[in-house]
Image (cartoon, rainbow, N blue to C red; front, side, top):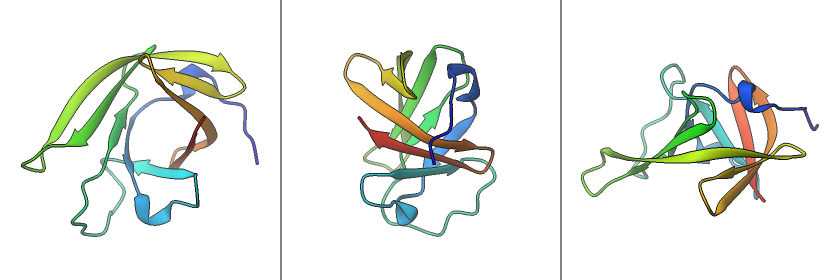
Amino acid sequence: MMRSVQTTTLSGTWAHSYEEDEGEVQVYRPYDTYPFPPSRQGRETLDFRDPGQVVSGMPGADDRQVPSAASLTPLGMNRFRLGDARVIEVLESRPDVLKLRPA
């Protein structure tokens, strides 16, 4: 089910719950409140704290997050450009889940 999403609704900090991915659909859960199971694989985070910006966190060599800030540009039809290259389509956005697909 497609749900209309505006830039202002992309807020909060989300962590990739890769165990729940469905094919190309990537599932993210609230970083601070979701009870993630233990994992040897690091989790990407997306922080939509500031309007028009996203901070992506990737696990570094010592497992701590390495943040990288980028612009967040709405492209229409629930698609957003993160920085210069990565484009995502928001399929679902609720307080407990964010579902994305690379576009």
